[in-house]
Amino acid sequence: MKTRREFLASLASVPAVGPRAHSRDANRPNILFLLTDDHRWDALGCMGNKVIRTPHLDRLAADGTLFLNNFCSTAICMASRASIFTGLHERSHGISRFDLPLTPQAFARGYPALLRKAGYRTGFIGKYGVGNTMPAAEFDYWKGFPGQGRYFVEHNGRTVHLTNLMGDQAVEFLESGDAKQPFCLSVSFKAPHAQDEDPRQYLYDPGLENLYQNATVPVPKTATRRYYEELPPFLQNSEGHIRWKKRFATPEEYQKSVKAYYRLITGVDNVVGRIRKKLDEIGQAANTVIIFTSDNGYYLGERWLAVAGRQVVSARRIGPHPADHLRPPASSKQARQATPGDDAEPGSGADNAGRGRPEASGLHAGTQPATARPRRTDLLADRILLLPPVSTPGDPQKRRHPE
Ligand SMILES: [Ca+2]
Image 1: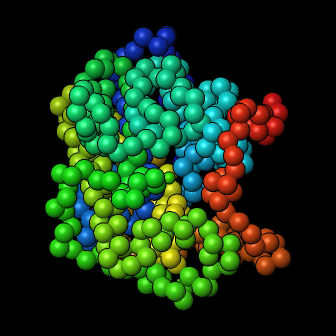
Image 2: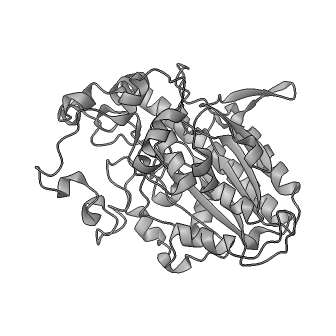
């Protein structure tokens, strides 16, 4: 079994004369990393959701490995993304605020820099999500943006949906490369994150308007006052509940919001289909590892909350991968056992041996003696949202990383 670091090290250890001296090598597969934002684990057809349509992602899962045990250590955009870049927990990388960038040293140890140094052509498209200073010069192809972005953008004199534009950019990246040079392309979707400042919240491509019109999305069994009132006061008064009021407070709003959220995900699914088609066309499909995941999970009304939450979807890959033996592909029967809409952990319904449950792994606070861990009195997300911006963003990180 290889760890993530060992996998990257094996790629980096292949002799490379320089960034422009390359040869096609099956041991240096292309890497396509697809990241959605606030995409919960059961908002996929392959995870048993009977409403949402995600045929391309379902096919990706069927062709590759569906990882049912995939957890986010800090469920908010920037901390999770910094963990993805660096392989470190939030307490180590120190990105606990939206305006904190990775230090140059931390960035240099992340997967984009390591792969570029090893001769990969690297690209980044979409929401970068870590700090406000964009590392455009550290990539060979850069179409990233700071902050949350907006769903409708002006491009070449017309208004386009961001997800579709990012699909165009991914295709442009794939078409413009040197076939002899391996690539690592990161596509970091804004979807299905809400556009918080807009009262419509989930701004999908109008071309998807007809989807789900006649469907009824199951309401989570925990979306009731009883479960809300069981929460401690800091959660009852959290930003998650404030946002719930804007999105899911009535049955009509719940159906409208979740269907819009699903349309955003289907928009991503369409782009995944375009990207895989382009990989076929350029002859790189068999030598490309595709990883699909999200930065964190999401509450769609459970316990009257609407905010980033427990982790989410799964990593998938096709093509050669050194971690093939890590876990057998999940059968469709297993995936169907997970019930969409339930307030359940990924794997809890699909793995009846309980291997995927945080409780089983000791990650869940409930497994620890009451005296070992005091109950929290606030949420990281709430603390971040209440803090004013800092003018010297490097300082807090410096304190955490004295080296
Ligand atoms: Ca997020």
